[in-house]
Each structure stands twice: as C-alpha cells, then as structure tokens.
Image (cartoon, rainbow, N blue to C red; front, side, top):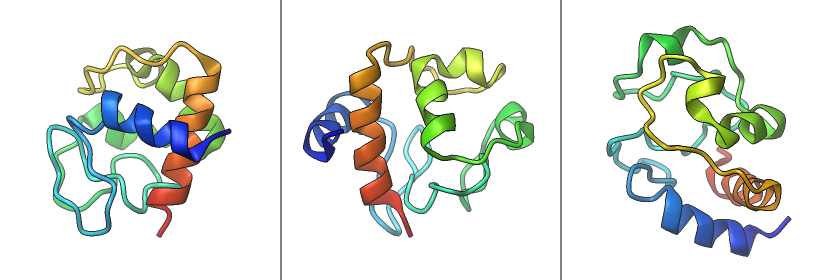
Length: 104
C-alpha cells in the first residue's frame, strides 16, 4: 500500500468534497479528520443522511475497502454521489493515506 499514491487518489477523486486536516471545513462531504475507528455519521456540524447515521458502521480498513468500491450499495440511502473505486490497489492506497492523515 502506498500513502503517496493514496494522496494522489484523494486529490483527484475526493478533495472536491472532503478535507482531511484537523479542524478542516466541511464541504459537500464532511471533514474526515478523526473518522478512522469512529462510527459513521458522527462529524460535528455536518448534516448526514439518516441512512449514514443509522448504518452502525465503524470506519476501519475493512469497512472502508467495501464502502469505497460502491458507496451507494454499501449504505443504501447515502447522499454521497461518488460512484466508487473499482480497483482494489487504488482503494488500498487511498485507505493507507486516509489512515495516516485522518487518525486523531
């Protein structure tokens, strides 16, 4: 897994809607700092879908790996409009970056 490649993937596929720095702003999607190991739908000040809040998912490598492949299939009713990342290697690289960058 490559954090460096993951950073590029984040920049091209995720940064339009998400920030990762501590105290970063919410955009169309929530700021992701501190989400690793946290239950979905918990970032203060962000208006999550009911589906996301009630999913009961705790974000970790395994749940993110499945979610990032097809978010709308993994959490039916999510308002995340991202189609997903089909390539396993890209998802693993992105998760390595998020784990390193977003852990509180």
